[in-house]
Image 1: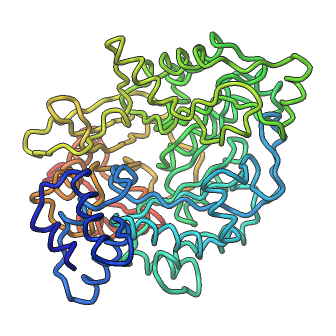
Image 2: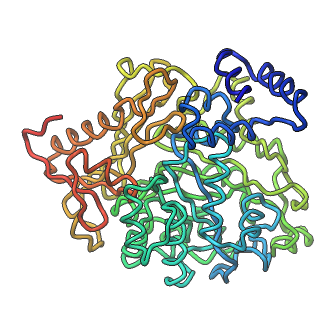
Image 3: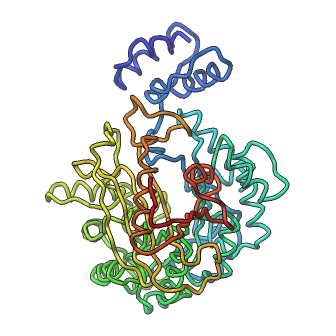
Length: 523
């Protein structure tokens, strides 16, 4: 309690001064006080009623603040080891892990520690975030581990339900009940992500994913050249990726594409052309991308090609220049989530081990007076947001079957405070989803800034959260939809966001939140 009082009385302490304060109090007692211990004590005192909550104090103590800088707490869980339908030569094989994962990767180590149990993994990650001072009432659940669509459906349903049970803090009798409870739970699911292969996506799979509550799909495209896909035994074609993306977009999903430069048979020039095609081809144009340069691992078939002299990984310099070129070509509607996979260096036989590749590339671009314009590089971070001075932008681009609107609010310096993805279908899809037929689709609504608890006011806080930006973006989307001739708008809402949309006049129809529009639509 004495430490907390000192912190409240000295609100301007920097990190060094905070450390000195903790060490000074540690000398007066037998233990060592860490930020983590102070946070847990603060939580306990608040929960017991002995202390009034002080959000500003918690924000100063928060450990690894960038973990929730995007406005949500990302909780990653792994599925159990299970046979993968793919035979990719670049993929590592470890019988203890899901396909493509290594036992010494941080996330895989946590999953193995919990014996891949979905409840235990989810519960533990929520607890870690909370103990580190983060608000965890808005959770993006990322289910990783091999090809999700290849797992038995009863396992998938059980896995998702148990994750919801952990978020809800109680065990439901069914997935449907768990989803219903989560609409008003303390830890609400605001996004559910799975990863799969393009050749597993069809209308039946999309129906199933929506039943589970999935809102974002990570697709392993890897390459856009059929001959390179064949050389690497990927097992699908570019046409599969195009069809999968068209179907997912038509259903309102957010799409994350995995792309791998430096595959067998590729060159830097081929990779650059590949990346250009991502944005010039109206069948592609993903919302987010993960750039995973191929790493040479001893337990992958590609290792034998290297030993025979048939494969050579790119040098650091080549990889830096390639990624720099890619970042400059990335459109403003896309987010580059990663530029390097977090593979522990000892596993890499030869080739780049630059785990800080993003920072190296950013430094190179700054030295050249250049800047990446992707979402991740523009999102607001720790600056004072004055919502009335934000600038509304509507970036329009074409997909093969829809007109896409990237509506965003930006600061005068170009930082991104929030955005909405609106899809206006131009042709009928092959999907049989009655509730969104003829509807404009809100595929994503995201407001940046440190995550705040649901309902908490943002006054006095340096964040874009809870300043009405989401409401304003929804209004703009509805206006665009009406002006384009749509009288129905639907949101691919996560179950934990349904109450938010209900408060704005939307009703649950199937697995979507839907609202009727008319010519006299007003805010």
